[in-house]
Length: 416
Ligand SMILES: *[C@@H]1O[C@H](CO)[C@@H](O)[C@H](O)[C@H]1NC(C)=O
Ligand SMILES: *[C@@H]1O[C@H](CO)[C@@H](O)[C@H](O)[C@H]1NC(C)=O
Ligand SMILES: *[C@@H]1O[C@H](CO)[C@@H](O)[C@H](O)[C@H]1NC(C)=O
Ligand SMILES: *[C@@H]1O[C@H](CO)[C@@H](O)[C@H](O)[C@H]1NC(C)=O
Image (cartoon, rainbow, N blue to C red; front, side, top):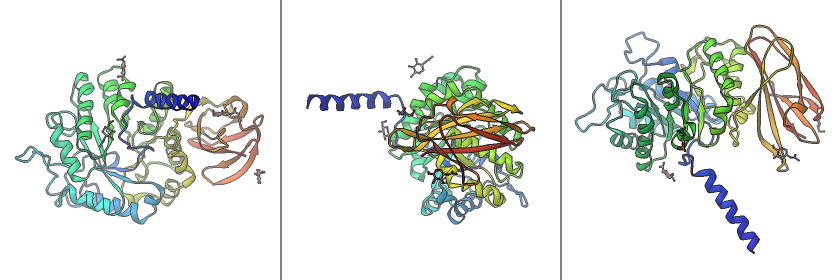
């Protein structure tokens, strides 16, 4: 009896130690998936006749319809998030934010209700200065009323930018706003841009222990641009900074490398495989930003590849670790991610993504005994992009890999 109780109390104590230091609002247990307006639409507030980019009610409802009707929702895409430029330039007489009356004539509650009626979730945006990055009203002196307004509208996810404030305000205001969100009683995913501004605007080192205590996810690096070079820069950043970022990453608290650029016409097929594989390997959010009608059939096929999504959304939420690919020609990086399913409480599955950012083909071997794999009965190997189980391996084997330029080989090893 004594032993039993002690085991329980130790268990309880470790649980506490584990948990006190992280935001526990029950949200974002897996990295959020969905759509966000900024990457492709940016402000898009002028909406003159004939503009192909307009951030308005019609756009947001069209994303909800596409998620509902075209298989995205079943694959896990859930949050539809309106970024900057959604409000009137002035608050109302009670100090409340007001949706742009011309572009959102039925208001935000209407949009939230529509999105919720499809079983999807609704996200919005603010900034912790007096104005937003695009000079709309911001939340610094209105945190309580804004938190209440978002809660009343039915917001499920709030992206909070950090333009135009000092380091000192960043370090205080994100904590305060998080408290006001909590006080509303409505669970909302809290997405912070805090470390990005600390590092790239104020040139200081972000305190990720602090940030992960208050935010469900946080932007580390520059906004993604609609170009392959931007995707490559993001990949390099997370490779370089793995050791600093990985310890703070997991269920409920994620590093956020920003949106996919699918559906914008700039990625080749193989480049789209690279961007999606990278996000899945990092256990990053998977947020589209495009006109849903512009997604190509091939992009749609890989966005709805359920083997890949299962890796991206794996409950362990581990960020893949980069390793050098010992190539005989070309250069590439091996990203390695342990994930479920697990065989007999002992042997995890592993995905290797060999990502080649260069133009030349890279060839080489993955020597399995150089990695922490340990299933003594070996593994069966699946090519994630074809779904084919093409090989069985033992721990002493090597897998030969050939990756064309700007492409990825993504192989999952399930324990036999
Ligand atoms: C508020 O914070 C408490 C303590 O961390 C947490 O248990 C609760 O789920 C939070 N509520 C909301 C609505 O975020
Ligand atoms: C970072 O934040 C943690 C948690 O709040 C704190 O214990 C630690 O002292 C901070 N580190 C620095 C360098 O400020
Ligand atoms: C195999 O590796 C897993 C994950 O690191 C570990 O939990 C497990 O104890 C290992 N099993 C054996 C038999 O080495
Ligand atoms: C791998 O091993 C399993 C179990 O023995 C077997 O069913 C399967 O056909 C093998 N696959 C390959 C590609 O050899």
